[in-house]
Length: 114
Length: 112
Image 1 (cartoon, each protein chain N blue to C red):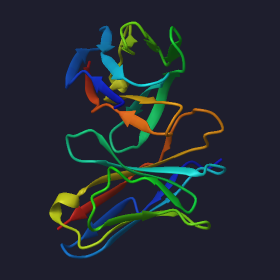
Image 2 (image 1 turned 135 degrees about the vertical axis):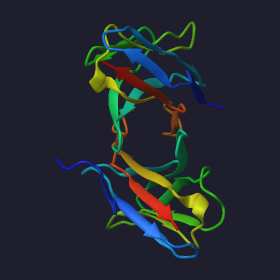
Image 3 (image 1 turned 135 degrees about the horizontal axis):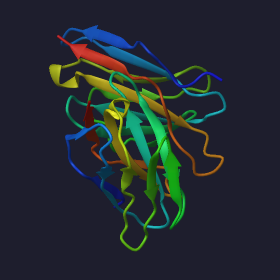
Image 4 (image 1 turned 90 degrees about the vertical axis):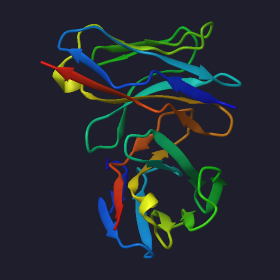
């Protein structure tokens, strides 16, 4: 049973470019979370999605950032016009929520903005 | 609002020393509590969990007891190994909102 798959694992962008990070949840999971981890800092919640719905985006910057989880295909976190401060590790996690359960994390996508 | 506060690091211990990482929480309702571990360059992995008061979660020699009276879920291990070097995150989720709240993480380094 494949785990949470994130790609790319490493992404380098120049300031002003766009970054797209993908996350395929575990099979059977319909709840996806995105977190950002800055160097030497903790894990910051960004957004929680279910299929075709954004449930909670309270942790996501109002500008340049967007997320989706379409009916078919992976969840995508999109960062437009990246700046150096966007350099971080972005983690996706999924959950089944048949009952209150755990989050299963991907290995993360590390974005470097030059 | 719901939140988790955990002991700040970094923590450095000698091999076979006793480990405690403190975690306290604030929550409405009846949260489930978790400890996650992150090894260098990897994602977070569930270490242990407890879903109701007085439950003890345990795994790989680590233990944590859900204490409702002190709103705590401290992580302990009797004898740490070099391979336990990692960042440890305390987390909670409640039955409403399906949201997870993480602490800031505690970095542990175990030296031979």
